[in-house]
Every structure is written in structure tokens, then in C-alpha cells.
View 1 (spheres, helix red, strand yellow):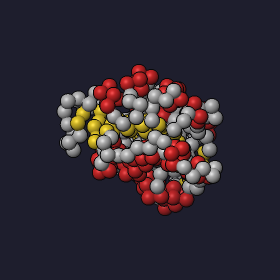
View 2 (cartoon, rainbow, N blue to C red):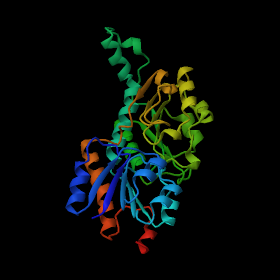
View 3 (cartoon, rainbow, N blue to C red):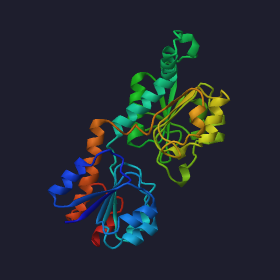
View 4 (cartoon, rainbow, N blue to C red):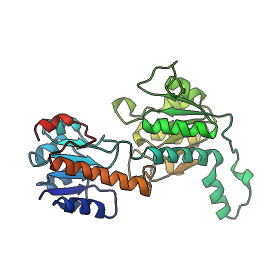
Amino acid sequence: MARVALVGFDFPEVEIERAMCAQAGHEVVLLDGRSPEFIIEHAVGAEAIISSYGVFTDEVFSALAPTLRVVSRTGTGYDEIDVEAATNYGVAVCNVPGYGTEVVSDHAIMLALACLRRVNEQDAAIRRGVWDYAATRPLGQVRGRRFGVVGMGAIGRATARKAAGLGFEVVCWSRSLHPGRKTVEGWEVLSLEELAKTCDVISIHTALAAETFHLIDEGVMRLMKKSAIVVNTSRGAVIDTPALARALKEGRLWGAGIDVFEGEPVSPDDPLLDAPHTVLTPHAAYWSEESGLELRTRACQAVLDVLAKRTPVDCLNSEVFSEL
């Protein structure tokens, strides 16, 4: 029987994980913390960890080795896990790519349309007893607007497809694509500067890395049209939050639809909370009942595979299996 720890877990119950692990003869323990210090103190002896928001540093892997064999994240991103350190200590790191492609792209389109039509502002006005659509003008439409996708992974491509289906003109930027060419789907690839200058919606889907930290900064926002809507369902730190809040407060942008923040849960003094023309959601884009079941099942199955000496489907450092 192996000990499987759930660390910094994002879900109110653990029945899926408990049932899957019990069937394989393993014990599940829930550890309600996410800091490296907490993990080092409480996860000693765990052979496997399933984590939503745990922070795994070199010190964590050093403290938990050699017992720990796998960390499986309930998500696609893994910026809070030092994969190189994990590899050095022979620990497999797994994630769940692709589980949220459809629902996250749905959410990005929803945020764009909600901003364009000022849905939340009209809803709030009605609840205050104001029946006057003109009070929330300007209101926009899809036709005649350009939709720029920043980051053309699976979610970015799905968002581009849906935006085009609604009638937007779609263009894109990606670190791996060359401006002046077209994607296999036919979307024109622009430089980031040209995309910022010409797009009415800028929807961000790039991973967070050193080169994408504050990718959308004050300089990029100064290039944007006054009609531009910024949508972010990727990682909060891809956008310079104070710069975005300033642009909104100064009337330099149409609006922003934000699902991810630089600090989560969002701080009460986050400048976006009192910025106008914003639609904010609590890192909810990844979740639907369907995607949630797939996410948790696949994350747990990766752990069970490693414990059974099988190679999991989605592993970020498969080279460790020669030593497991």
C-alpha cells in the first residue's frame, strides 16, 4: 500500500481519488496546504502526490526523496513545479494537457462577448432599477472586428476556430510561428506589436515562462486601439496587472475579461477590482462538470500508473523511468 497525498487540492471532496486509489490498494491523505514548508513538513513518507496549487522547489524534492516517486498536477500548467529538480531526484512530474481545451476556449469567447456587449454592466443596472441600455454604451458587435489570439496551442487554436465561427476576423501571434505566414488553419500570423495595434479583441493563451512574464505590458497596451478588449484565461502574470488597470481607468481600452490573476485568490487591493468595464471570474475557465471529471481521473491515473511501474500517458520528464 502506497501513501498518496493530495496537496493544495482544488476540490471540495476527494471521492474520485479515494475510490481510484482504494481499488489499487493505496491510501489517500488530504493535506490542506501548498507552501514548500508545509509540503516538507506534512508530505514526508508519501510515494505519490496529486497537487492543484502546491509549490514544489528543489528543497521539497530533496526532503521527500527517495520515497516520493511522482507528482501529478490537476492542470496543464506546471510553473509551480521545479521539473529539473524533480528529474534530478528521480521524481516523475505529470500534468493533464488538453482536458480543458473546449471549456477554456468557450470561456474566453464568453468573456470577449460579455465585454463587447457589456452584459454584466447591463445586468447590474437592471438590478439597480435602471432600464436603459444607453446607460452602458458603447455597445459593440462581432462583425467588422478583428480577434487576435496570443499563443497558438490547443486552447488558442480552439478559441480562434470559435471566434471565426462567430464572424470575427482572426489573426494570431505565437512564439513558435513566424510573422508574415499563415497557420495550417489559414490564420494570418502577426508580430505581437502589429496584433496589438490592429485587434479589437486580444485573447491570451500562452504559457507562463520567463519570456512571457508581463508579455502584455505598458508598452504593448499603449499600442492597443481604444476599442480593444483584453481577455486572459492563461496565467495572470502574462499581463502587467497595474498597467492594465491604468489603461482601463484612463479610458484607453474598451474593457477586459479576466479569469486569472497574478495572486490567487485575488487580493482585495488588486487594481482590477475597481477598474471599469471589466468582467472578472475566479479562475473558473477550466471547469465544467465534464472537464473536471476528466481532469481528476487522468491526474489520479498518472499516479496509479507510476506506482504500478507503468509509464503514464502525460509525463514531463519521462527520462526518470529508467530509475523508477
